[in-house]
Length: 84
Length: 226
Image (cartoon, rainbow over all chains, first blue to last red; front, side, top):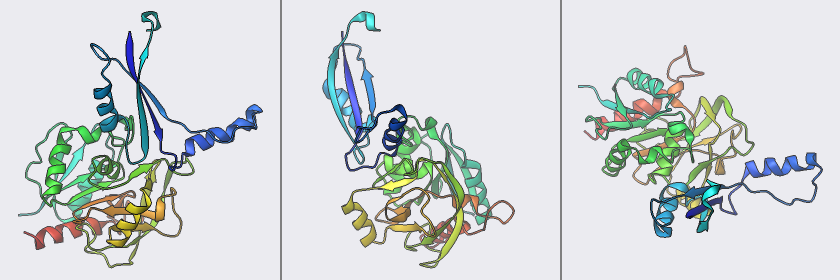
């Protein structure tokens, strides 16, 4: 089986205070060598039939990501039925 | 006949009743509009109120943008109808591409709820014509994702064309770029504002009545263009 995976990330130049807050918490875990953390969104889309990258790209561009502040990538991912 | 100003209710809208009340106090007739109904019921202007439309899922305003009523609002805005988006309504206007830029998580991550001073930077819009340029007003701000961002060219263009409608003064509550609190489209009929003028329309419940000018301005604008 295959599904389409869309990853949405804030553009590099857009401040990510959420990521900064996570980075700021890491020293409390004893981790001191992290330069930066940025947080995005991971979306899995299953089509009725075959995964359709073009339509997934359209969905990502129109709804899942805001192109003003976010970039996205789209890829097909194989998975075992038992993963469901 | 009095002017009719529509106020859209989305699932999760909070300030629709306050917006209706502000319209009434300004002397117009508020008309309730429903997110799933594309009929604007012959209104003269539209307000998209604050709240958390569709639970703010995905991004604030991202899902509301695709509601039936928004197709009509986008079309009417293109024909010059005054549209005011307050808080979540501002986010929806940006998602719908009626206004440039986007509203993101407050820089300090805290929800900010306080009375806030703004300076009216432009009286060229349909919603601020009744103010004086440079006038400072005190109205509530309450948001978690109110930090306005846009690329430098867009910011310069807004600045150069007088489309920054209001700026935060005496402290920026969310890290908004260039202290932007409100902007307009090129024609000036569409305005998005992060703080809440509808919460400052009478002495009993607001920190001032400074917000009333948005609602009286649009009525004067409509009267002049009738």
